[in-house]
Length: 296
Image (tube, rainbow, N blue to C red):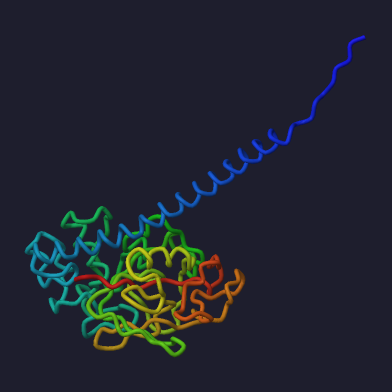
């Protein structure tokens, strides 16, 4: 009578199997991290594209996009002309909601329209030609969408899932606990507004995960939210003449001790302050945006 015997796995075989499983799991995790980094890198490349395009535009046309005094000279809509003051911002006659007496003064939108009309960016943005503007004023619709990232908190129903970029001159900051960064003079690109032109105090905010913005800050600047040329923001507090936009209302800061549940964008239990990268940013006050200083 034949008897079949079944041998157990040896310790060596088990060890090899565990190593293989670990390699597979590790490969999946590494692959996920690489995909995330690749997606975030798209937003960084957009900043580089916009900054370069604005400088090329100024050298080619001797004016800034959106601010050109007579856009018809270049074959563009007459109502897309700016006031020619050298700043892409609100001229006299505009209120804090971006509503201007003269329709030609919507420089924040026409900035993108001029760049596209000049063949310098691939995003087809329409000119603002009416008061109130006929173009939807949501970033990502009236301005280029953000590539590679998604909003974690959507303060305005119907906003594009990725959010969008806005441009502004002379940004100031408030509401930092004991450390207010200096103004970003010149021009800046910003993420997080629900409007293509930042509105007055009390505007609801669209927000991104702190980890996403930390990646952008780390690639472009020093990686810290309250220093350098990339500053973490919440909402626009007010439009202060002459053409200053003040950011940082709401609970952007707080003591978190590195936990994943406290809805703040920036940790204040460290020195210097750091992005609260463990928090996913899904609550209104835990998500945030950034202002990035431009070179033009």
